[in-house]
Length: 138
Ligand code: ADP
Ligand code: MG
Figure 1 (cartoon, rainbow, N blue to C red):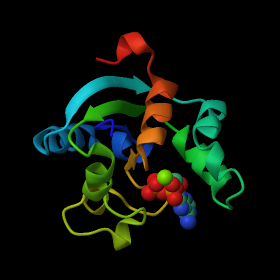
Figure 2 (tube, helix red, strand yellow; figure 1 turned 120 degrees about the vertical axis):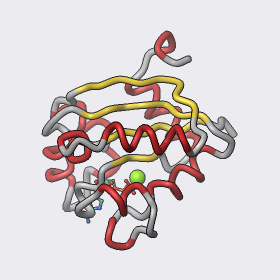
Figure 3 (spheres, protein in one colour; figure 1 turned 45 degrees about the horizontal axis):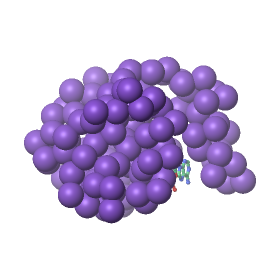
């Protein structure tokens, strides 16, 4: 287990001014930030990141949304990071997310759901390396 995961504060949460509160929550939950950047994805780059969802009906909407404004990308470290962080963010659809989860608190819809969290150690590494060079990962 790598004990690292990858997250993004998505354009909705950034636009709505929730970045500080979300980062504060993440740090208070015991995650150490190992890489961090503000970046505005092109549609091409957003499409590459979510290529696994290419066949899904919401792919076009997802790519447009993820390239609609800046995001904050980060690599986080904590014991059992991938699984614990998925619990902290809550279900994909904020209406189904548990009380107190980040998506429940800050997200408005299944599409615009405030944050990303990797779903496996393997994908955490792939996604972290998509955004950060080795020099940028502490
Ligand atoms: P998660 O981000 O919880 O891992 P998925 O990997 O299934 O969820 O989907 C990736 C992202 O695609 C979601 O976070 C959300 O932004 C978007 N998405 C998923 N399902 C839908 C849907 N039914 N309609 C619109 N957007 C969706
Ligand atoms: Mg996913």
